[in-house]
Length: 64
Image 1 (cartoon, rainbow, N blue to C red):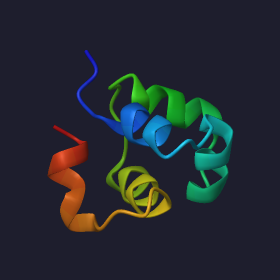
Image 2: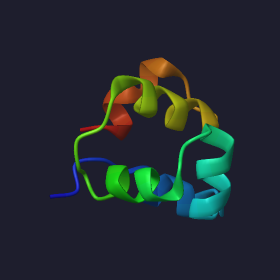
Image 3: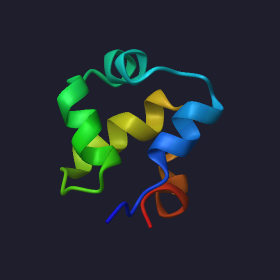
């Protein structure tokens, strides 16, 4: 069901789930749900992209 590559990108950058959640200003539980491919708000996706150092235009590469 995983329809995004957040976990793979996060691990390739050697960032923990807690650290990414803190950078994105979201809860670790929310990040876990997003990594599992569960529905999330556009604002949450935007925060995650920016926290990973990506551009908003990269959204289609991350969220398939």
